[in-house]
Length: 280
Image (cartoon, rainbow, N blue to C red; front, side, top):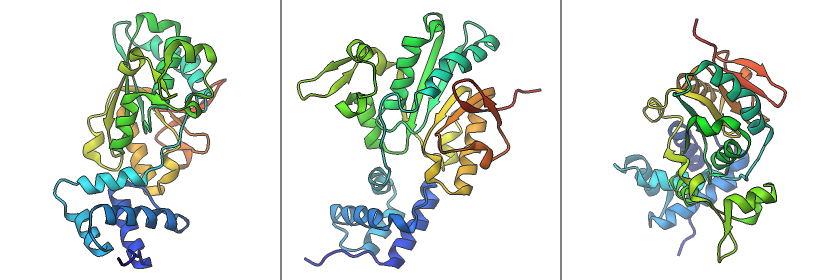
């Protein structure tokens, strides 16, 4: 059987197509990574060569193969309590400021994107449960989204390796997880039910237009994979999704100020975050 080969022209065609569909830009340095996954999907679909496969990608009416390829192309590397200082900022600074301006019977809404395998949204749920006194008399809606449908399935299952939970205090691990027969850690049903998972492509306005009325957004270590235009579109989607006065937390290597002037910088004792200006 002849070995499938991806030419430079194939790579350039695919890179431009994938960027338009997802906002993710692959640099030349990612060529081996991209080629390897393209070959895997060409063989999995019995396409035989890049040209046939690329036709399938572009014209398949249901878009199933584009979703399958997207699932293999997105990197999902995370763990519980990653960049914990932002969760501390959430419970010590952001939420106390937000609740002062919201009626007691109103729902606080938090959006975590990308969800990856669920460590971030479950970390938020854990932090609220353990460290935010107002959780006892405040209704919180926690939504988490990702473009990768296979990783969303894993997130909903809530089973994790030792590596994923290694930074959790032992007391929290004991309280909120149980050890499974295969050596993994299963998060409690209460925390699983606290998070609603959904598929969202930030580059598709049709996907994001229903996401409105959020008080806090966590979008960490995603925008580094976007180019300037895609970052700007994502920032505008987040601006529309937030309530006036709402906050967005980015990864430590990301800066909203370098992307847009829509948000203002807020420096709290625990972290720097970005705020949608209050309505005047």
